[in-house]
Length: 143
Image (cartoon, rainbow, N blue to C red; front, side):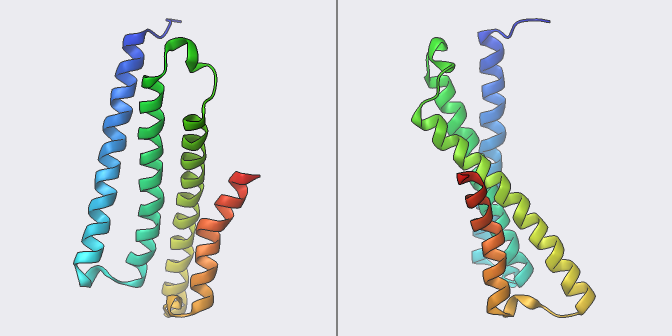
């Protein structure tokens, strides 16, 4: 097995920074589109906005982590620092939130198609969705 060289590390960092930046840009474009075009402001699109926010946080976490990794000296990469801990929280939380919002969207679409009714007009459903999408991943990450 070949050892990873500094050149390999920089190439991998460049790929990570490029893909995360494109994800961030795509997510921001989706948000701008949602808020600018009123035809897109439906209940399902609103759920996609929350999924997009979680994905934007993930991309931001990858950018933060990679930039921090490149900033540190080779000797210091073994230990943790506050930026690394923040980046870890952001990416773990946002990945869990993304999974939760994807599941919420799937269940919501099933209920809408099966029951022929849009449940997002009900306040309790909105509260439940936000609890599952944001609070549960935060609680899980903090434990």
